[in-house]
Image 1 (cartoon, helix red, strand yellow):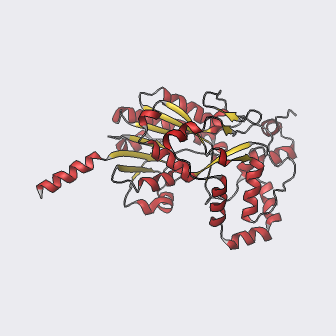
Image 2 (cartoon, helix red, strand yellow):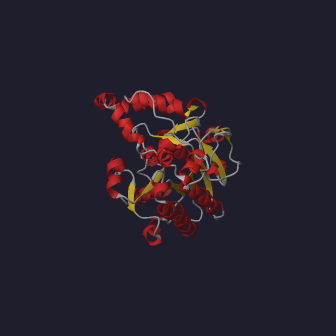
Image 3 (spheres, helix red, strand yellow):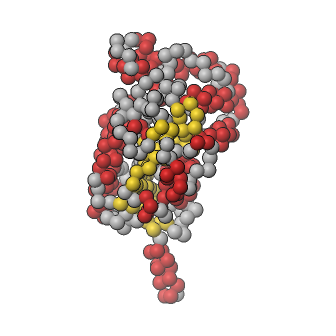
Length: 354
C-alpha cells in the first residue's frame, strides 16, 4: 500500500498546473474541452466568476477540471489560486458591445484585472508561462490598408474602449518579469452563437474580414502549452488563414441566408463606413507554423452554423424577416447617428464632420 501511495503522489506532482481564466466564454469553453482530455498531463484550474454561467456552459467537465471561484478585479479573491502554476491561459475580458457601453467596467476587468493577475503570478508562480488573448482591434481602422503585421502601429479606433484596454494591457505584460506570449485574435466566430447584435453595424461592409472559429482558437492556446520555447516573449497574430477570408458583406450575407433572414437589404447608413477594425493577417501563418491549430475554413463555420439553427427557427426567421430586420435596424448606432445628425456619431461611424 505504501509503495502504490508513493507512486500515485509522484505521478500527480508530475502534472503541469494550469490556471485558465474566462473558461466559460466562447473561446474558453473550447480550451477547457481540449484540456479535459489531457488530464494525464495537466492539472487544470478554471477560474470562475459567474458560477451559473460556468455550470451551464462547461459544467460537464467538472469531474476533470477543478473550478475555483474568483474575481480578477480583487487581489484577495484570486490570490489563493495563483500558487505553483506552470501555465496561465488568460482569456477573461469584457468584450464589445458591452465594453463600449461600459468602458469603466472594461478598464476594471481587462486592464486592472490583468494587472492584478500578473502581480500575483510574478509573486507566487514566477516561472509560469503567461498566454494572453489580445485583439485585432489594437491595429485600429485598416479599411484602406487591410494587410496587417505584428509590427504595425497600434492605435485604437475612435470610441473603441475595448481596443484601448488591450493596447494598455499588452504593455504591462511585456514589462512584467514573466515569460509571456500575446495572441492578437481576429474576429472569432462561434457557430452556436449566431444571433446578430448591434456591433455588426459598426463594421463597414467593405472590410476585409479573416475569421477563425472558436474551436480553432481554443486549440491554438492549448497547443501553445508545449511550445513555450518558440513562443515566449513574442507576439503573434491569430486568424484562420486564407480559407477563412472574405469581405464582411459576403460573410454577413451568407450568414443571413443560412439563418433564414434572406437578403442583407438594410438601408444606406445602417452600417458604419469608418473607424472600426479588422483586415487580413499578412503574417498569420507564423503562429500556425508553430502550434498547428487550423482545421476549419469559413465553409466549415457556415456548415456548423446551419446545423446549430433549428429548422423551426429558420422558418420563423423567414416568415418574420422584415419585422426582425426593422427591429435590428433600430439598434444600429450608425443609423441612429445619421437620423439625428449627431456630431460625435457622424465622425465616429462615417468620419464626417457636421
